[in-house]
Image (cartoon, rainbow, N blue to C red; front, side, top):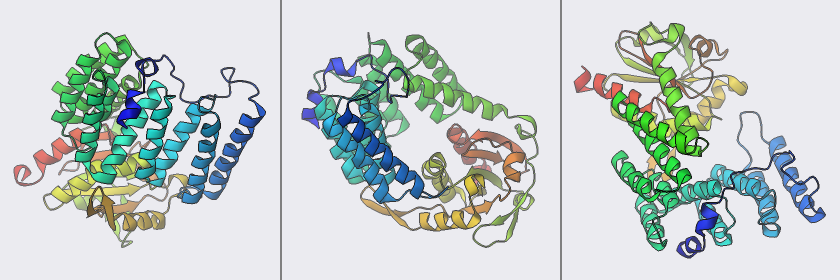
Length: 414
C-alpha cells in the first residue's frame, strides 16, 4: 500500500473532478466505442440478473453479486479511465461490502491506488473501506499501524489519510478528535480539504451529544460551509444536525413530554401480545426497523447491542418494532433475529450478535404511522412514566439516548 500511496500524486488528490457516477445526460458520450459499449452491456446484463434473482426484502445471491462486480472489473481492465470507470469502482465497492469480503477489498483498493486513476471522493471512500477491511481481518491495532505507516510514507501529512484514519471504529472520540485536529492543521490553504476536516470534527462532536458540543459543531460547520458547501462531509453534517434538531423538538403527539401512544403487538418469538402500558416503570426504547435496512442493522451493532447488554437488568427495555414495509413479515424478522444471535466473527475475536432483545411485528404499520415514522431506523425513548423523551432518526440521537439511559437506569437512575 505504501508504494501505491507514494505514486498517488498531489495533483490527482486535489483534482477538481467530483463526479462519482456518469448519469445519462449530455455529460456522457452519446455513443461509446463498440468494445466499451459491449462491456457496459455485459455489466448491465449482470445487474439485471441480480435484480431478477433478489426477492423483495430478501438477500442478494452472493454468486450474482460477485458476477456483477466481476463484470465491472472486466470493464476497468480495458478502460481504467473510461466514462463509466467511477461508476464501475463505486459498484464494485458496494458489492464487496455486501459480500463481506475484506481480503478482496484490500486487494482491489491497492490495485486501484497503483493505477492512480481515482477521483478525490473515490480516494476518500476507498481509503476508509480499506482501513475498515484491515480492521475486520486483523483488528483495529493493525488498521492503525497501516494508517500511521501510510501517513509517514507520504511526503507531507496527507489530510485525506488522516481523515480516513480517524474513521477507524476502534478509536475513542478523544483519539478521533486529535487526529482530525491534525488534519485541520495540515489542510491550511486548501479550502476543500479544510472544509472536509472541519465538518468531520463537527460530526464527531454531534455524536458525543449535549448542547455545548452541538453549539461548537454548528460553528465549525458554518466555517466549513463558507469554504466548500458541497463537500461530502459538509452535506452529511448538515443532514445529521437537522435530523437531531427535528428529533429533539418532536412533532404533534410525538413531542417530548407527551404521553407515548399505547399499542399491543405480537412478540415475533413467542407470539404473545406485548402491551406498551405493561412496561410502565421501565425506560423503554422503541426501535422501528426492517431486515433489509442497512442503517437499522448498523444502529443495532453500534448502540442497541451495547445498551441491551449493559442496562437490560437495570431498568431498560428495548422493543424492536419490525415494520411491514416491502412486505416484511414476522417470520422473516424472526429468521433474521435468530441468525443474528448466532456466533459471529469480528476481527480476531468470536462473539455473539447479542441482538436478542424484545422484538414485535407491526403487520399493518399502524403503530409506525401513529408515531410518525417516515424513515428507519426511527427511535422513540420513553421515560418510566410513559412520556416521550425524544423521537427521531436513531443515528442522529445515539449520544442523547446513551446519555439518558446512563442517567436513568442502573444505580444512578434508581
